[in-house]
Picture 1 (cartoon, each protein chain N blue to C red):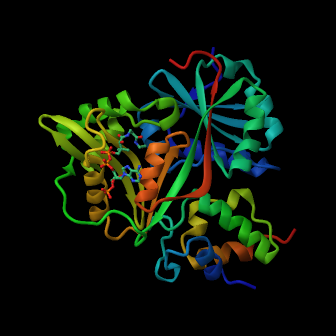
Picture 2: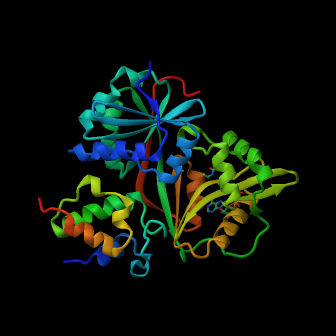
Picture 3: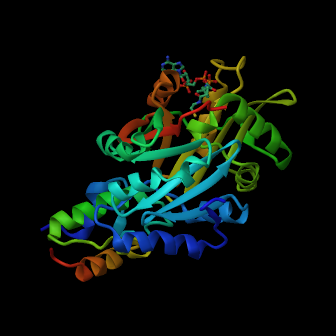
Length: 75
Length: 275
Ligand SMILES: CC(C)(COP(=O)(O)OP(=O)(O)OC[C@H]1O[C@@H](n2cnc3c(N)ncnc32)[C@H](O)[C@@H]1OP(=O)(O)O)[C@@H](O)C(=O)NCCC(=O)NCCS
């Protein structure tokens, strides 16, 4: 199973996600990337991310994304 | 009487969108807007909202028309909302539908069923820093001054169609000039060209690149582009949107190392005379 970091590197290979705690403010992820990321997380981990949880705060860092994955339900 | 009421706080906007998401089955939206921009529209009294058929509709006033943004629980609810007379009463509307070509086409279905016609398509292009492109030597282009704001807006309005290109308001131009994000090339007293950009962290978006007619193909655009790259040493990803039919600009963007990333913007407008 791919890690969150590996998924992020696949989406935006030009950035080093291990060095930032503010992906949105640092310009590393935009709202389109969030949609791609959500579908990749859902496919990779077999989860369903609630539409309401798709807010920037849940995508600012690897820890925040891992927290979101943990909270998301399996369909 | 209109169903649309002015939005007076960012929280009201956020709540309206989240409320629809909570109820959504096949959530349908074209709301990919930076909250700072929404806040500027609210401050300028330019944003109104209505909830129709379980769908949140936002209208943003711009020049002689309005931009429509929707947040709908599913395409059927969106179609029902768009069919309401309160929407038809609002005059000329434009909507930007973003996604892959197939996804944008899918999003277009409820709009096409309710009087919206395709008007233009834009493609997003990306350049990763380090890709081939302009050499980054110093150049005579410089940043715009506050007294340039009207000339910048005049040049943009004379050259671009606001229905397609999402032109900035006077306040947007003033704020970009204040932030050092508009580069200009002068031709005597007049503005010969400009490059308007927005940088957030490691990503920079080129909003407008323009050389006055009569001054093109003489290297002015190249100077602006070189100066842009020189001023963004920390940027890793450069983005821009360009109209699909603007072959000349697309060729030049390729020359500077940009390539399409598969994201499209289908602009649809309601019937009637655009101007
Ligand atoms: C696009 C525009 C800004 C370019 O400005 P310009 O002053 O005409 O451009 P330049 O003459 O400086 O040429 C720019 C670069 O393109 C290169 N170029 C020109 N024609 C080319 C071609 N057919 N193929 C490949 N490269 C080409 C030039 O050599 C130059 O590259 P360089 O930096 O390596 O020298 C200008 O044509 C314009 O205002 N067009 C209308 C507005 C518009 O469409 N803007 C873009 C969409 S926002």
